[in-house]
Amino acid sequence: MRPNLTKDINVESFKGFYWLKEELQSFCRENGLSATGSKIEISDRIETFLQTGEIKKPIRKAKVNKKLEPQVDLTLDTIITENHRCSQHVRAFFKTVISKFHFSTYIQEYFKNNVGKTYRDVVNAWYAEEERKKDPSYEKKIGPQFEYNQFIRDFFADPKNQGKSREEAIKAWNEIKKLSGSNKYESTINLNI
Image 1 (cartoon, rainbow, N blue to C red):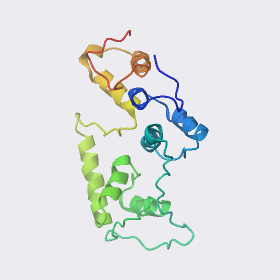
Image 2: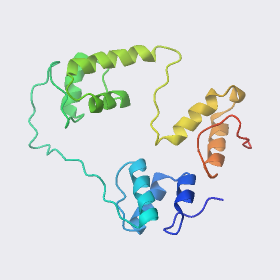
Image 3: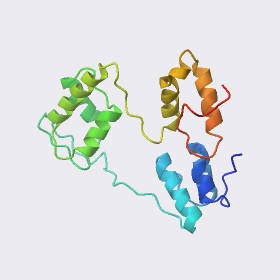
């Protein structure tokens, strides 16, 4: 049975169960921890608190003052900087080059991981990703914080579940997230669906 998320929970129990981000944020507010950041960051903060009693401060990213940020002319030779922002100004530029452009997760990650490359490289990466999407075996990467999405994808990828409904997949998810341990879909798990 899933325990209540209180400051008395042990770390193994905390890590062994699935928690909604809202539950993690409520725990943080009740115990004087920052409730900001991604689900992974909040979980890490709670784990440290449960182990040591330390209240970790969130890692603050330097904010760029929008009013002071110059609206420079962007070109295909513009260099991706460490403080790059996926702003409306940047989106508008890319829309002039790629009519269907949007800040996909893939492109946002590309900006983050390719400091020093140019906007021309971003355009090439965009088109390369669009080509990969045409492959029937293409699967968009799902971030580790999106356990539900990964479970549902894996559920339907299992040949044993051919013809099953989304409601059956959700029912299986609701059962597994109550259990201690991994929330990953495994064909060998016996769920009552």
